[in-house]
Amino acid sequence: MVTGYQEFDRSKFTGNAQTLKADNIKMDGVVDVGRMIEGRAAGVNVQNISGTFGTSPKITIRGGSSIFGDTKPLWVVDGAVQEEVVPLTFEQLASGDASTLVSSAISGINANDIESIEILKDASALSLYGARALNGAVIITTKGGKRNMKTQVNYQLEESVRMVPTYSQYDIMNSQETMDVYQELERKGYFSLSSHTQGRYGGVYNIMYRAIDTYDPATGKFLLENSDAARAAFLRKYEYANTDWFKTLFRPSLTQNHTVSLSGGGENASIYGSIGFFADPGWTVADRVHRVTGNLKTSYTLSPNVKIGILTQGSIRTQKAPGTFARSENTVSGGYDRDFDINPFSYALNTSRTLRPYDDNGNLEYYRYNYAKMNILNELANNYIDLNVIELKLQGDLEIKLAKGLKYNFLGSVRHVKSSSEHSITEDSNVSNAYRAAETTIVRQQNPFLFTDPNDPEAIAKVVMPEGGIFKLSENNLQSYYFRNALEFKKTTQRCTRHKDILRARVSPYRPR
Image 1 (cartoon, rainbow, N blue to C red):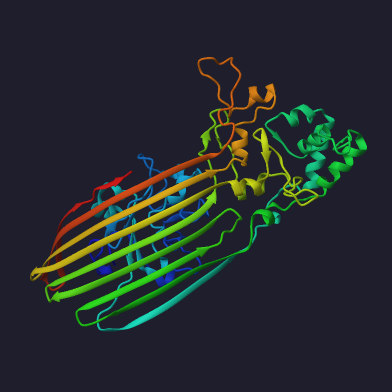
Image 2: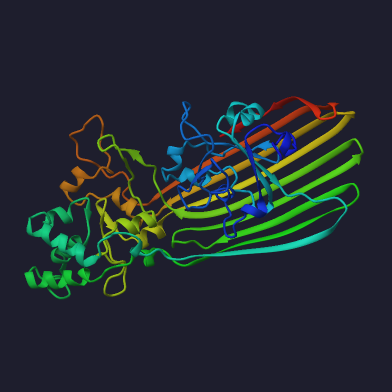
């Protein structure tokens, strides 16, 4: 087994660890290395908080409680500690904020390049990697070439299909049941014209009241006659709409993961190289992912006593996701609130099925949300995040046999990761329109997205963005250096007794920005 420092005979390792071979845990279609160990190791709990690519699953090895508040394991790849670009707590991982898209430390590794995974579950991880491995360590070893082996070229294609979710999996009212509730509320006086045309939210009744209140000069009439018969006829088409938001926002998607690898070796050298391309057109109409990975691992035997190895790894990822704002804690309810939440899955579950994406003429149909017009298809097209991630790692190792039983090992690794998140909110989005919604005095007084002078709280709120949209740029840069020196002494004192002593020193500075 491999601990990142040494290779042990399993019978001589006294710690609590488990070895997972890639051939046994590899699941076609699963490109996230963290999710590969789900259900594969005893005592290791993996919770998939989000299905979005790049988000880290919640992994616990030594229990879910800690006085330090963090129970995430330490990731080690080919002997070097793999730092997270954006360190997040488990609570932050579940937030759904944009920062979770770069929360995984190993999203740039091609699962087809992995040879084995070792999970250190007890104090053995702490003794090797210090306090940062207090919650265990996951040791990843990537594939390498073999000496005296003919050159082999392999091509691997993985395809997976995700189907559209259905409402049969959830206990949600259809449009007729929802309309019955609406009409009962209307009879009890809760659905007035003013509350739906000037309130923060408004659905089917907002559409109806706008039609009643809109005069058409071409016909000399209002768009809808304000009579019981006309209102009932108007609401009937929404009663039977029964919109399937899953079919509207989701689509059957075919993901592809292509990997071309080359391996071989001669008398004194070996090589393994691979290029991978992952393409996900998006399970929803609002997301997509493209990732290119490269890996080159070589080793050379310069003499019977000297060996060196060189490793180069890199990845480029482009990703599109729905625009999202950071959530805020609601101290009254004890929960969390998020303004302008347009997560497609959450929207499909929580939006009334009486609403329609298109009107009778095939045009987008708008309702009221945050004091402004809203259509989810229009919003996803005008409120989105473009994510770009570039990662490069250079690593070298040296092994020198100084004497019989005495060996010196050196490992050095330099890793650079840069991510940029561009959140574009156009002028026609619900967000931009909410920041300038001030058509009446009532709306001005209630709209929290308008500016109120803190020195004059009684003043009328003002619109500070009369036109245009919003552009938010977030960048994260990680520079990680890892160096390790180790002396290993091994001597057999009796036929069945072996002593192994290790003197090691490591330096692992990193600078996240």
